[in-house]
Every structure is written in structure tokens, then in C-alpha cells.
Length: 249
Image (spheres, rainbow, N blue to C red):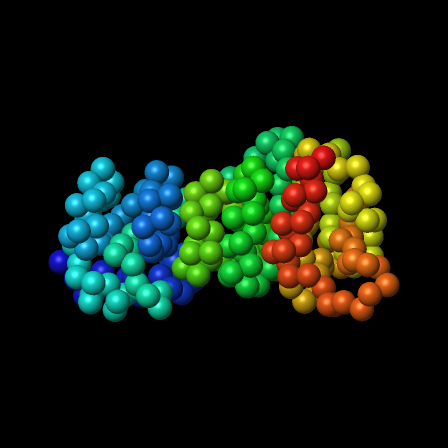
């Protein structure tokens, strides 16, 4: 039985303030829930009798059966699934040694939850395990972001910190690449297998105060060069192109 108090908590988790206060988030849908289940502690597994019967191996602090009609009342989806799970938020620590010897992404005020979720999914595809975000970047535990990651949030650690502090603590030998409208043609540059890729805000790009930390400015050229084209690429699409180029080399 799903109590009124639990419903209140679940509905509150749609707001960042309460996700932070309770140190909880929720995920919906069979693929997303089953993908992230091994990685996060599950407080409440809420699903239909049929779904629970098909997934008996999954364990939680409390398993609650629910009718499809009741699921519709707590779901954040237009078409509710048969399962909603409430998980405990992880407490990640930034490992500068690990980051300096691998490829990581920094996000500077990426605002759209869908863009953030897609970038996490891209990072997962290209074997990038750490994304460092400024505090004004969209919340990874927003239900829309969780949904957009398609389970990739389980394998990619998303950190929030002051980016200036992060770059000050980063070993000085770590190359930092930023995407700009004016920079070196990414297709002609020699790209390493480790370093930091900085992606900026959807409208403003990379903040001016972070410019001093960028050691290599990269540009994704349009084709053909003389053709009139869109003003810019969506940040998630740009991230996919950049990550692909780094891994291709």
C-alpha cells in the first residue's frame, strides 16, 4: 500500500530543493530502473504486481505494489510505466588523479535537463566516466534528466563544484579543450586520449572567466565553409562530435 506520506515525498522529489533535503531521487520505466538498480541503493520499489513478479531478483528497503491507476497519479511521464523506484543519491568525490589521466567533460551552465541527460548518455557511449558541472548546470537528478540518460547515469559520475576551484586544483599538465565559434579546426588537430573537454551554456557558450584555463580552443566548422548556415550547434550534438573526434584519434 502506497501511503499518503510516501506520495507526498515522491511528488516533492520533482523539485530540486526536496531532492537535496531528502538525498533521494526517483526513476521510472523498466529500462531506466533496471539499468541503474545495481548502482544506487533503492529505498522504495513501487510497481504493479505483474512487474514485481517478473523482476523478483530486485531487492529494496521496501517493495510496494500499486495499481496502474495509482501510478498515473505519481508519475512524471505522459505515459506512465509499470514501475517507479526511489533511490538514495550517491555522494561522489572528485578524484583529481583519475581525472588527470583520463578524458572528462566539464559543463559550464548547461541549463536544459534534456541536454544534460543526452550528454551523460554520450559520455557513457564514449567511455567517459566523469562529468564536472558548475552549480548552475541543470540537476542530474531531475526526473527529466534521469529519463534522458537512459540508464547512463549509473556509469557516469556527475559532480557539482565551483569550476574555478576545480581548475585551480587540476594538475597543470592536464590539457583543457574548449569549444568556441573561433578556434582551431577540430578535424585538423591532434587530440590526446586524456584531458578535459569544456562545453558551454546553450546561448552564451563558455564563461569568460573560465577562458584563462582553456589551453586549446577548438571549433567545429560548418560545411561547406562559405555556405550560410545555422548560428550554432545544440550543445549535446556538439559534445557528441567532439567526443567522437577524441576517441577516433
